[in-house]
Every structure is written in C-alpha cells, then in structure tokens.
Amino acid sequence: MTTSNHPAHGPVSLDRLHQIREILSKAAAQSDGGNLGYAMADAVKVINEVLECRKAGKFPITQDGYVMVPKKLTAENGAKGVLSGEFSETKFINCPECFGEDECETCDGSGRLEITVPVTWTTIKAIWVKGVEHFEAATQQKNV
Image (cartoon, rainbow, N blue to C red; front, side):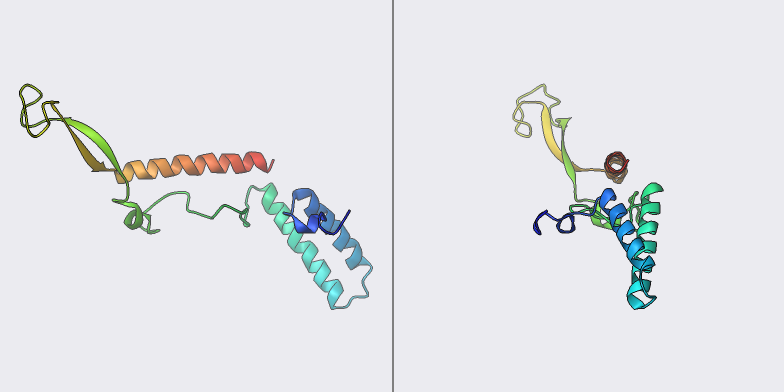
C-alpha cells in the first residue's frame, strides 16, 4: 500500500473505525501509563461512543455535501421569516372582464389570465418534510 492510497487519506468508513479502535486499544494496553497511553485510551472511548451513536441511528458528524437542518420548519427556528414569500407558482384564472366570451384587451380573447401567487407556508413546510424524510431514509439505508 502506497502512502497516497492509505485509508487515512480517505473518509473514515465503519470498517476503518473498527481498525483504528483495535490498533489504539492494543497500543494503549502496551503503554507505560504516560500521557500518550491515556490519550490513546481516550481516543478508544470516543470511537466507541461514535460507534454506539451510529448503531442508535444518531449521526453527529455530517458527510461532505450535507448540512444539519431542522426536521420541521417553524417561525421559532426562523424558517418562516426566511422562506415566506420566497417561492411562487403560476396559475391561470378565468378573465374577470369577459369570462372568455368576447374579444378582450385584458386576456387577448383567451378567457384566461396568468397570475403569480406565493407558495403557502403550509405547502413549503410539507415540501420540507418530504425532503427530510427522503434524505433521512437514504442515510439510514446507507449506514445499515
């Protein structure tokens, strides 16, 4: 194994975490009790905690390309103020001038008008929940 393809240069997989724990456990057991030995023993404890968190489905460390976000959007966590009014959709309504029965300058005779309406806060929250559910399920499948 060359230096460039050593596992230390990549992400820490579950297998690698177990390898590191074993290496540090053996080294700590052979230590003369100095600071390095205590540090290795502490590192083993940290690794054990991470492994327990993974088993329990708690992932305190995020992967590259991911961020921690709240499961639900609320006014209290600031989401309502940030997201309300940020999104809109196009809808068509019947022309209130002619109802599609005459030549009309308002709708050019189509009988319909295109309007832009804001996406409701309820809809924004529902979309968010679906996204969180998707990525939560994908993360759990990946870590099984």
